[in-house]
Structure formats: C-alpha cells, structure tokens
Length: 326
Image (tube, rainbow, N blue to C red; front, side, top):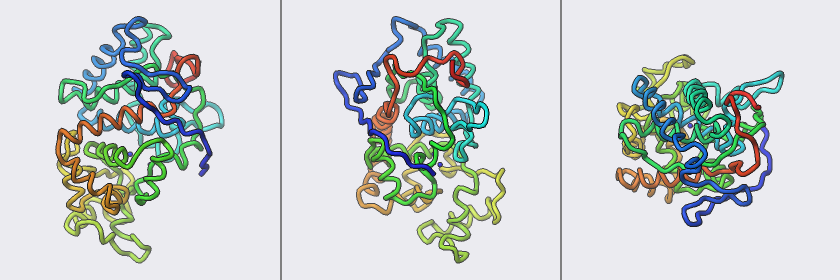
C-alpha cells in the first residue's frame, strides 16, 4: 500500500454455502486442489515459512504484491508478468517499482511444477504465500484463502493508474476507489491495517512534512512530535533510498498498533490520516484497536479482496512460469 481510468463491470462477491462466487466468473472454494494437487497448500506454506524464517519483512513484501495485483484487473497474477517488448507490464508502473518478493513466488512455482505440473495457478500461489508469510510468527493461518483462481494473460502498466490506492489520497477518493472494487468503508479501514508491517520511502509522505499546502508548511493533522521525528529521518529533499517504519517501533509485528498510533495522529501517510476525517471510518479505527476484532475483520476483508474480478473455470490459463504467459 500507490492515467487512464476505465469503466468496468463491478464484480461483487457473495457467499453461498462456503463458496465465493464472483458473478459469472465461476467459483473459488476451500481446498480447490484437494484432488488435483493435494500437497499444494502445504508446499506453499512450507517454502514461504522457510523464507520468512530468514526474512522478517517477507509478510509486508508479499502482502503488498497481493494488494497491488488484486486492485488492478483483479487477482489474476498480472503483477507477476515481466515486460515483453515495448509494452510495459504492471510491474513497471511507478507505484509498483518498489514491490519486492517476486523471487519467492518464482521459487514456489518452480517447486510446484515439479510435483503438480500445470495445475496450481500463480494467482493462487500469491494469495496463499501472502497469507502464509504474515502468518509465520503465529504458526497458524491468520485468515482463510479460497482457491481456484486462474492466471491472466494481459499486464499493462497503464492499467495501474487510477486503480491503486495512493498514499496521498483523501477519504472520499479512497472510499470511491474501494467502492468501485466492491469493497466497503469497513474493508478500507481493515485493509489499511496492513500498514502495521513494512516500511515506506520518504517521498510517499515528505510533502506532509515540508510543503503540505505549497507554502512550506506541515500538515496540521499530524502529531507535532512525530512530524519532527520524521523530518530528522527524512530531511528535505527526500533521499529516495531512505525508508521509515509505517508503524513506529512495531513494523515487524502484525498487530493493532497501527490503529493505536493512528488515533494519536501518527499515521504516516495522508491516506492513513484521512481515515480519521470521516465519522464512520474514525469509529471503525477505534474498534479495530481490539486485537480479536482487527484479526477477524482483516480476515473477512482479505477474503473479499482476494475474490475481486478473479478468472476461474476456463478463463485465463495456468502459467508454467509466473513471469511469462504460456
């Protein structure tokens, strides 16, 4: 967790007997690979956990890749495709240039093809690995991931424009973008909780510190002490290589600290602070300071996000290599 804005059919998921249907796109289900590749989910988990053991930031990396995949043309692994020729892929769109963790998905896919060739999609591997990397410290799955996605064949950098939430967005912009994806204000706040892990580059928030209204001023909504701390870490002009914790002193822990600090006006991004400018979302921010409430709501929202505009049935393909179409 950021211009062509295209009109598209909004595919809103609904739940029927434990199966998520996305209009006519088909079905996602639990244990989709039970018969075709029974070891699929265990293999994803085992490899992801082995990587997470040596990289405490992996959860933040893969969760962000999954977000950026789903918000552009749905959860079809189009974010994983490399640029071919002159048409830049989503991966090369400006908001995606800082994405990391692709090599982990490559490794999982390579191992998967050895045991179940042509069966498990890159889209499902990404959704599972994102969940498993965040879950590693807890040693149990933190939310359910339904499977049955297929991989898209198209990936265009231009599609990222206008479809990815921006750190500079105000509340109404965020609300409208999420609504277009079939997501509610509750989903917006819950999914923003992913900012409890990971880091951000100074350029994503330096304007709040040094030139908020174009007059060399600081965003008045940010905690003054926090702002001074950020200015020391990110002096003006911003060094593009410098990063700052999105959740101060807690960026490696998947917890409710994000909502606690946000209520202290210590949200890093303008889009974080925006959640306090609406009465309904501000109330949800307070509610999600309770760990069991956050984990429950985050899981529900991840399930909804993971079903956005998915390809199922005979649509798309099952890539042999996640970086290129078959």
